[in-house]
Length: 568
Image 1 (tube, rainbow, N blue to C red):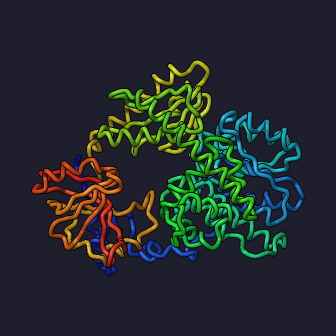
Image 2: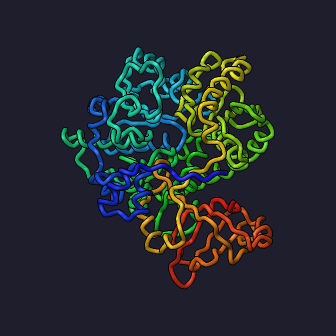
Image 3: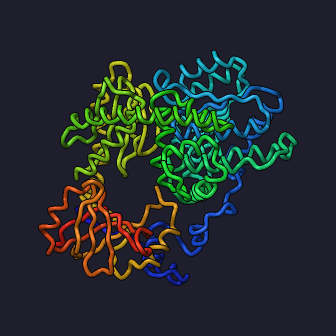
């Protein structure tokens, strides 16, 4: 495995250093696209940096149409999705309209029987359950539901589509709010809940102007929902997303919906003072997603809308139980999926007829991760249950384009560049197996040779670079995530003065010789302890991230080791 330092422009480095930034920090910032002009915003993405919602095309028209319906007493249906982003977006708009005393209900499609987004089946159920619907507002879906929108409008029902997914060849004939269709670049990375948050701001602003709403601020808990969804939907943590996530982390303790606080207590199992991105991405988010994967998502939605402790606690218990069930099903499906991997395939297409289609996406993600760890060239992974499939792909692919080119075998498809879903036509699986890998082969030929066997690092460093003061300064670069990864470093030619297994032998603790006490943990590599003891005189290169630890007598630098290899 080659470790390659990320490329950075000399001009960008010089400009940041001229602005007073230290050399190594300047490199870290430059590779993240930070300039002297954006320096202050990057380190302090405060609420004053929040853009006006009216900057997003269509949002004023959407707010106008919704408020006209509210004023007329018409029922507003918020048509959401069953993942964390969709459920959070639904809760944002429902909470906002409830503050106006509007007639509003939430509607989520059934993943098992109706599929993703607005389909003929979900629209039929919507009209059956709510025949008095006046206006439908989609969140986190709808951009590709051209026929369904036309059907609703033919019934005399207004439709507003808010989404963030890639559009198809034609747009629904209604008011559309979607940064992927049209918006200034600072909004392009918004998730569905991010779009809903800005729509909420527009609604509140117009409602105040017109006397429809005269109450206090409703945005603090909505910041939390938008920031949570931004993390769980793996959106880039830059531009407006950086403001949303920073605010969500700061406001969580005081302003998170009571249900989220109850779920956090179950997920964290501690009373940690600081809520982190990791709490969102590995604790709260997966539990909310599990509700939609294993059921219909309404328990998670109830959690986000609950307004008393008893109700919130009960929803948190149910959502947590769904997550336990999800883990069991997921592991079984993953074990079965790995057995079907085909050597050298341009795309891995795995059929699990006995699987749970609500878990297909996360299994596809795990199989892709498995391919990466195995050292091979990663390729798109499709996990198909019945006729319904979920796709995940490595950087460099465009899943939506690949599915579009495979459309003759598909009944329905959609998603992002690196993740998507589809439904195969009756009897179309063999055709899909022919077309989709052929499409993916072209991408593999373009970039696989360049990326195979490489891992990017931010900088090669020396031990003297890693002072407590410098590593403390890294914390100011948070929140870390997609588009703003935690800095990854590498050291050349180190020896280990102490090697031991920890955590009942699961993990490996390594101390660096002649480094002033630097040490680190290599998680899930406890089985390598004897190898390093036998090679105690050998020299290694080490890849890691760095943080400050308070464990022991004084604050010190600690590594999270990512990889170790013998120095050539």
